[in-house]
Amino acid sequence: MSEKIVEPKPSTTVLWIDFLRGIAALGVVFHHLLSTTWSGFFLATRSSNVIDQLCAYLSLPSYYGGSTVILFFIISGFCIHYPYAGKQHLKKWDLRTYSLRRFLRIYPPYFACTIAALSIVALTGSSNCRFDPAQLAETIFMVQNYHLGNIEADPVLWSLPVEAEFYIMYPLLLTCWSNYGSKKTTLAVAVISLAATISGIAGWAYASLNFAQYWLIWFSGALLAERIRNKSDLALRNIHVVLMVAAGLTAALLHLRFAAGEIWSCGLFYFLVVCLGIKSPKITKWLQSGSARPFLSLGKISFSLYLIHYPVLFACGTGFCFLSGAKPTNYLLCCLFSIPVCIGAAALFYSLVEKPAHSLARKIAGTKFDPSTPIT
Image (tube, rainbow, N blue to C red):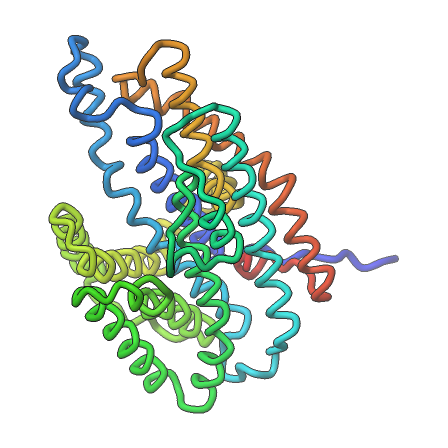
């Protein structure tokens, strides 16, 4: 009689990370909906329709949705380091496997999305997005942050070169961690991030357009993964109070448009959010219930949703203008139509591009999917 094989189940930490991925992607989608599909707060609040005026106030939280990119960076640091975390870092380390998986994880979807975004803009016949061959070339080679900037067809692509730079720096980071310990490594990363932030404030833009300014935020996720793998206490006291203070500070700085302050305060806020879910028994119980499944499913396609949502929203806005002559003033109507369309497009993109890229990465690298660890 053959022995029944029991597949490992996702831990509650992995479920929480998947949930946050979905929320982060949705935050960015709602943020970009404001400028692509909706007429805007000013026109909506001056509409003759009272319902449109009232619905406009539902959009206010969406203005902060763009900050969830910082949450993605923390999750990335957590997920990249999690398989290698523990007291014996280099035992499981293989540069070839790591490099292949990182490249196939990020670049095929990135390239496919770049082409898809340009195609959608071309098909809609819009003149609002300028096409620059040099800018496209820089985007394809992931160096657009240093010169011409991102293609207008999909401005969210700026974060992918930053993510790639995190991946490139990780082997060095892991080596320093193993040889010098977490405290010295943390100090070095903090100094580099602080120097990049100060340089950006001083007007030296190139110092703040790469990974350096965000490195400590990304590294905080890796530190969290290290403590969890070592089964160490997170040692966070009164986390709810600190979280509320961080939320207030973040909202204030976002409102004041102080970019450097936004980045660091958002980093603190979202780091505490990640910790809260890991420590909270109530959240742990909810994640294992059926009501959490839609959010976990959204987390599964979050990368595709993040990549493809902007050109899809752009197409929705163009469609509204073509059919009615203007974008709708009813914010709720925009959400009820555009969000499902974005999720559907992301699910299709995931099936056709991201999932095959994942499978190819595992096949070439000779690794198997382990549901007990976060998707990397």
